[in-house]
Amino acid sequence: MLRLDFIAPLFVPASRPERFAKAAASGADAVILDLEDAVRPEDKASARQAVTTAFTRLPVILRINGAGTPWHGADLDVAIGVRPAAIMVPKAEFSPALQAIGERAARHGVGVIALIETARGIAQAERIAAITGVVRLAFGSVDYAGDLGCAHTRPALAHARAQLVLAARLCEKVAPLDGVTTDVEDGSRIEDDARHARELGFGGKLCIHPRQIRPVLASWEPTAAEIRWASRIVATEGAVAIDGEMIDEPVRARARAILARSAA
Image (tube, rainbow, N blue to C red; front, side, top):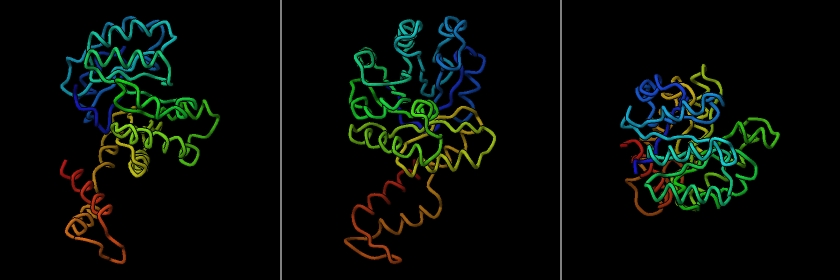
């Protein structure tokens, strides 16, 4: 199974195969072929036939249509046959259907990314993360806001984001992917959103346009100030004070993580 700790996966409609290689060359560290929202009902069958992983060595994720839709079974069969790095399951909630997808995918060496987009899914996040085959959680923040009837703002989404990060950590899964920023023009907005996600403990952010990739990747790179701070901290021993801040082993662990991320 390919590594699934990517930071800036880019969505591309599975109905547009001429864009697959372009998406892979965009700087994204993974590509999500989308059979769900990005494809019209009349194009689902032809999009399914276009699915491939041969255009890149990057991880390819296939977002299928959800259980209960007319396209789900055929999408899942194609996913198992093509064997992408992972299958992204939309509107993920704890259910026998999701358990069956996870078990079937695991038998074929394919991971499952549970895209949590509903209030019920957030409430069940830890149970979802614990399902066999589920390797990562992702936040469908726009759909979640619609389901809950709340604003798509940081305060309104804070609890849901915290729940996903906590669930992933408790189940020892890769840190989750934050939801999309719908603004594809403002690079500073996407970078600020991505840094906010990183501060909360997310491991990456879903991208819907190539312009978003570099700002997202940059947000997970430690700043020069963070690297200088971490370098000073790891040189300490015991409990000491530096610049008025008490330093002990948990703080040194955070500093080592910053330096490891910088090296990566």
